[in-house]
Length: 419
Ligand code: ZN
Image (cartoon, rainbow, N blue to C red; front, top):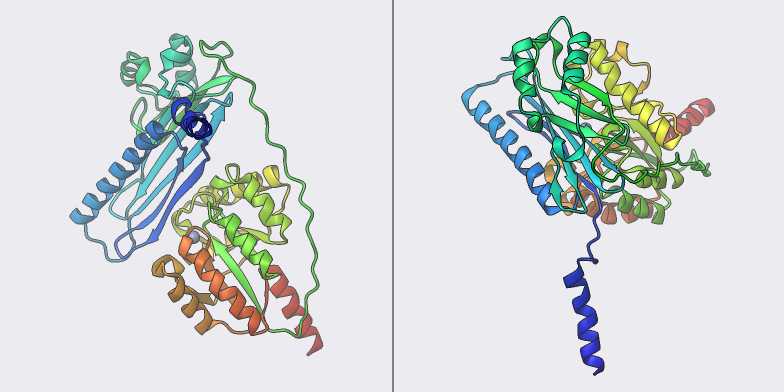
């Protein structure tokens, strides 16, 4: 009898689906190849149907790039593919996703931009179309678009697009519906991507009130530093990611700290991880918003990449970022003069992004490490996490103090004073 009961208990989750726990992770591909630069971020939601569609979009976009590279030869400036994401769950139920693709190459007069949206009902396990969520006043929306973009709207194209409202790209909140139009879809190219938020309060679907995330109140912990001990600064780029928390736990075990140069686009989705990063005495630095190569951008775009990151960190974590590390390590005089933050590079490259083997990363790091060095790693790879399990105990054994960049600078300043 007991055995049967046990068996039944095991079966329950299989039938009711109530064992289903979904956790959001952000998948990351950052590559500096011989033929191209790639930076891709997209959410993995745990909803198979939705994840499959997102993955298809990413795969197809990458295939197009491959084809393009095959057909065009580059010598100096490489083509660059950047796919960024926005992810919000409305009413604890509806996933709203925007993927923005940016592709640039020296052979193109203008970068190519493309927007793709997904609206998914987690409870019903289905994609939602505009007609599923609300009645929209098409006439009003067209008029508003015309008013806001007089200089570039092409009336015939606008009419054509609105003939099939269910093909419109959109996302929604409990207050509004936002529409997205690709360049040349309803307007001439000079207007780029057009985004229009239409206030809307009546929906066909039930929307629970979303609970707002509170800003964290972390307590910075000031630890005792010795200016006599050999000291190195550990730095991690491109995160946060699903490995960041594990890395911080490991650092804590060895009384070590690091500077994390993060991307602004992931801050809200990794709010809890980043709180833990800060509470453990680590430092955050700015590594742009979505990892575009910055030396190519106009000063306005560059400003956005930096300010958007500083702002989202301030808003979500209550933390002021002071340090900056450029993407792909690429700097220029104009970049330097446009940034009023301290730029931090590195002098030991573990090449973890290339090696992807914990033993090799460990050996490379250990070979190059000396007192006063700044080490470059990336907290987006499992092999990097694994290499730290070898590296941290070894460095401790050798008497190293492992600190943040700011702490290293503090120690160096103290040493200079003494001399
Ligand atoms: Zn990077």
